[in-house]
Length: 248
Image 1 (cartoon, helix red, strand yellow):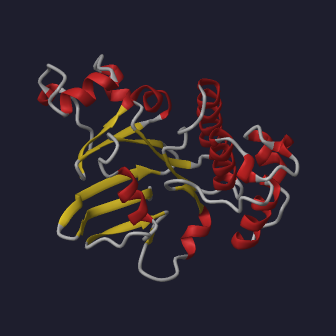
Image 2 (image 1 turned 120 degrees about the vertical axis):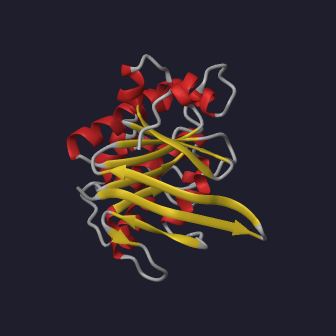
């Protein structure tokens, strides 16, 4: 089966300082892949290279079976994303921002209200997005990412700015999208507990290097919680990480 995301030996340096070091990653079709690392570990940088917002020095990226090259990449029309802080037209409403996204993607408007309702922001009416709270803007970013029912979602810290209830709602929504539409999801976070509740596979990055990819089922079967595994892998858990499963 073709991987939804396949990264091979990807490296990137900026002004002589490496930010990504020989990264390999496999996100299987139909799975939720949790990308875990501290702030500054390289999560956002890697996600930017997937879209060629940042061009890698070496290595290859394949999304949905298509190799990503400089220039036009039609496969991006099948992908929804949030990378870093989402940008909107602040003087327009949520609906109007979604309309503009539909025009950009060449899609109809029929899913706008359904998607805004799914994220709990359908009742904002003509309120300008510039007056939204951080949590509401994050919900709108998720709505925009999911508007065209993409085959792959790439989500960089999508629960930032959400209150506990909002985090639960987003988690349940992403799981539903994954189960009902078989959408592959790559989701980054530094919140271990949240990733452990949603992800099938966890990839752990530190200082620009991929330390491990491991199945959550494998961890559970071995009686290991994600926090202990993570701390052990970074050398701070008090246990010998060599005894832990490391996945592929």
